[in-house]
Image (tube, rainbow, N blue to C red; front, side):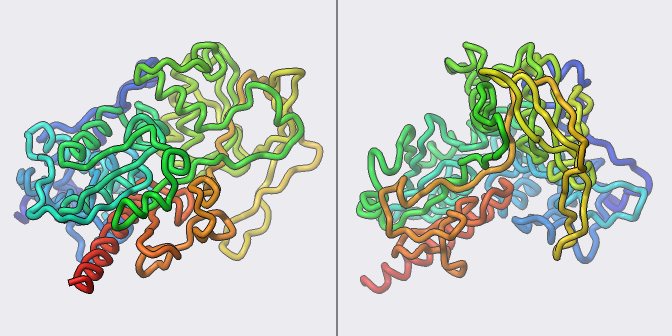
Length: 475
């Protein structure tokens, strides 16, 4: 109703309660609390219900944000959940980890000086509340179909596709190299951003819905791509990209220089109760160490904030551009600074120093040069500007590249781009192999979870169309 909305002029923006930096730096629990019903309704009522909703336009999933904000403001919470989940398979996960400051909230058109609607926090509330109320049930297809689909990768793209295909009645099998489903959601993102039971209840629902998970399953080892094609009527490759980008500087081969994903996986496994030898022997534990993280994206933010929680002596983030050009979430940078992380802006590594293990990082100052064709300024070293940082553990967070899937899967016929991403027909999302599709980061390169969900949904739609077309021809 009209009197439930347009209250941004009388109600201030208010995020959910945030734990104090000193308290939260001592554990891996989430930083932000959850709105109560009144708080969610109040903040939703700030929405202006604009005629052209830029929040929705700038959401990769095209979420119907104004609609579920209106329903929440009116107290129609089950309907709000139904609208939210109609376009998003994991709303409560996106509400926690999406960079809303660059997407929906960053494009909110409420008048200046009134602050955007807290879309992400409301999104999180809507689905967490739906779980609490028991509104989220296992999937029960109207009709069971004989066709089966094999999905390689249990990350967000694979899980989103699995859910959509199961809704249509297909027999879905998900293969993943890890011992838990969730991909980077479970092993790459720390608990202070995404607690693991939030992921576990999602994957548990898919299991209860009849989706079969084959975990600890290495495609190319236990079965190659050709065998999966024989077993299933269609196959979706949704592996993500896991190979770390390297850095070529002197001393990079010294001990205690580690890749970001190795470091985060060890920490997450330890938090899940697993025995992690490299954590137990201190190799991947930052406790008492001077830690230098190289990189400026969200993975770098995850690493520096993990090091703080492990009891590091000091934590520094070395980034070659300035704060304004930081690719990581503004909110994450602020949280890291509150927790004691020192950002060394406009700086790049020149060499790692040490005898056996790294003892210091020699870096140089950088400045931003002339803009390129896209308007982005390229960093360049400042002559004779070297300085040294103490370092007992260096973590490389420089991004990810695809693994060599044709070799890994025993499928040299699988076509890839010169960057190693899988080549697809973007109209059908099919690879050069009939009935083999691909989606997510393995097609677009390292990107956001919300884009992976979008790609998984799109791939599922194309697979459904492909299988139905083939069934009609066979009939």
